Image (cartoon, rainbow, N blue to C red; front, side, top):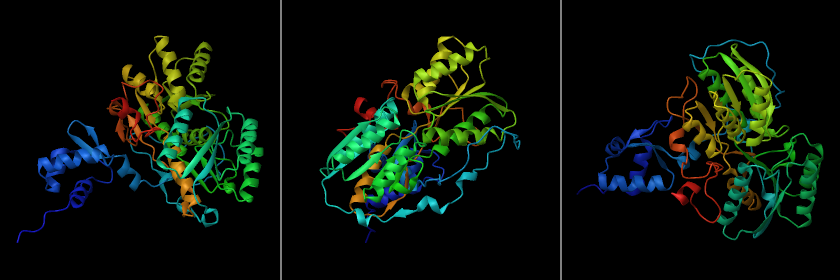
Amino acid sequence: MAPPAPSNIERIAAILAGFDHQNHPRPTQVVLAEAGLSRSTGFGLIRALTQTGWLERADHGLLRLGPRAAELIFAPMEPPTTRAPVAVSARAGRTPETPMPMDDATFDAALVRSVDTTAFRAPPPYVFGFSNASTSNPWRQALVQSLTYGQGVARGQISRIEVRDAGDDPAQQLADIDALIEMGIDLLLISITSVTDRAISNRLAELADSGLPIVAVDRRPQDRASLVSFVTASDQRIGRMSALWLAEHLKGQGRVWMLSGLEGASPTIRRQQAALAVFDAFPGIHVENVSYTDWTAEGGIKAVRQLLEAEAPAPDGVWCDSGLQGVGSLRHFAGRNMPIPAHTGGDVNEMYKLCLTHKVPMAGLDYPAAMGARAITVALDILKGTLVPQRVEVPVQVVLPRGCETASVRADIWAELHVAWDLTGDTILSQGPTAGTGRTKRERTG
């Protein structure tokens, strides 16, 4: 008797098992041959796996594990820290020819702490309040859209989400929080305006003591004790990897301008600290200026214009903690018909369009706006009484143009495949599915 034919589950497992831990792209024909699949069966399964995100096409004829598979193997690598701000100082020199040791990849038990939420268990439907720092840039708008998508997926478990926009004003956010509490919300979602604002931290502590579950998304308060969970992405990874790429791309020699985001915001602080720590390891890298841009293109233009008008020669590299201000820097250099230095900064579609059009070496690490939808699932788990992680990290991809990899920094995806030429410049490529549909913006318009 012939052995039974393998099930589709077994066939899919054989396909996925062929990829190594570094997720190197593999030729489609090799994947099928090693899995023992015919062309008709194999291509049908691959088509289904790519459509659902388990696989993705790395290039013509090449496959790699997709974002859904990456989420299963991703582990957060940013433990809580009380590290003091880093200053440029005397440096322990190194050369860029060998990879930088990944010191921050050491396991820390804080990465896997969980919270018992039995005390918060309550029947649906729920009313959520979201106190948003602002909607002052495309990323923050995409965060709200992702959160709205998460509400839609919840299928009636949430009766409504009340959203308040603080306009980056801590005093307004404090008033917003009180207004949400007056509405009788079951859970508070919050993205903090300023990590150093004590009034907000104290108010959140009072609410936590009263029994209200609180989940921070994107930005957290200084005092984490009020939070049940914090949904974010690794700001240290963004700061460290972007600075490391720039230092190695410049072969350890050059002048750097730093364009940070919003002064006082926790992502700004953590990314800047991580970047300065990397630059500090390269004796030939000189950080000449740190400017704050409020994460806007106008802020990036203003910072670069002021430096150039002060008769400072153009730098060898511009470190941006996001493409939100990076597009402004690129526009200003291009508008003056000047050679454009190497840049860092991801997030917005225009950043990739400008760098690829002008052939600017760049490194993008997209801060995933999809964390909005993830925060909704965490909030629902809390109200169901499910054990939840104290910190939930959404994976961050490294995006590089072809030919721009360095000794330590390799691409998760090529910029040429990541950019969406058919979408607007302010599209946030890390937003994920959008409200009203299970498809991404790219898929909706493609």
